[in-house]
Amino acid sequence: MQSGLRSKLLEAFSNAEGGFVSGQKLSEYIGCSRTAVWKHIEELRKDGYELEAVRRLGYRITKKPDKISGNEIQIGLKTKTMGRHIHFERAVTSTQKIAHTLANDGAKEGTIVVADQQTNGRGRMAREWYSPSGKGIWMSLIIRPNIPVHATPQLTLLTAVAIVQAIEELTPLKPDIKWPNDILINGKKVVGILTELQAEADQVHSVIIGTGINVNHTLVDFPEELQKIATSIHIETGKHWDRALFIQEILLKFEALYSLYLNQGFRVIKLLWEGYAISLNRQIKARTLNGVIEGKAIGIDNSGVLLIETSDGSIKQIYSADIELK
Image 1 (tube, rainbow, N blue to C red):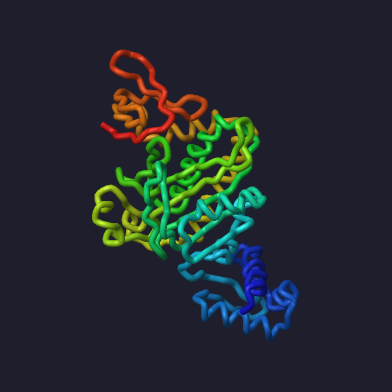
Image 2: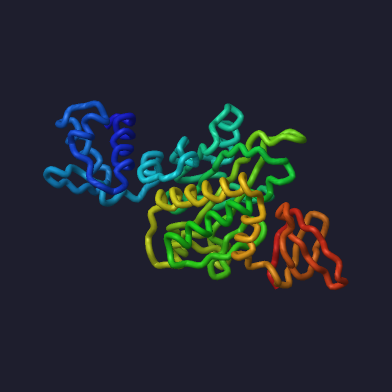
């Protein structure tokens, strides 16, 4: 099936939100004959879609194939802006690199870059992020907020809240957030977030938010050195999950929180983040570029900076660090 016709067909089913679409409506929407519609439906079936056909009602999709693509993300997407422009690749070195190029070229806010596999995925401090094919969500989101440069770390915390809310919406799991950018389930890392800027001294041009989410990994899918510290949604639930559905839900949660943030500021996001934070009111060790700071994590300030109270009662501001819970 031609990609344009396929996109139109899936768009028609997406607009129906799980309901039936008549052959006549599909014919009019796509711009082809009823016979051609039937042939396109059969092509979808061959590609792994399960469709129900009922006389006088038409067709509806009952199950999508287990793969990520622009089409699979598009069908059922409920956002207004986030994810409405999708750049998908089977394998890339890094979705962040592609997103930077697209942002420089004027990509619209809400554009996402998604890959089934990353060969050189990266996290904070240039660390490698293990990104195998067919297992996780490797995605970068481009946004263009009108905020001061110093406020951009708040968007990492906002993204963490959005992903936790999406996981809670779709699964029975209760994730925790570890400052600044890790999401844990039962003490093991399941999500990492990398936020990067394209900015001048006093103006943000774009913010590129990269997320790596371990969805359908089994334990043996992880390298041995990660098996004690990493987990996946599949490992924690015993179920296989639709990755495109997770992307849709994350984008929906992010869009709602982002709108709230732009209209009302960071305060509400801060309260939500603190409700999920595993590091607060705990003794921690923060390894910074300038040394190690130990003390009690007492909260974050209005910029998203971590506050640690040391044994002498002084308050230290932590802008970037690896956190070890004691």
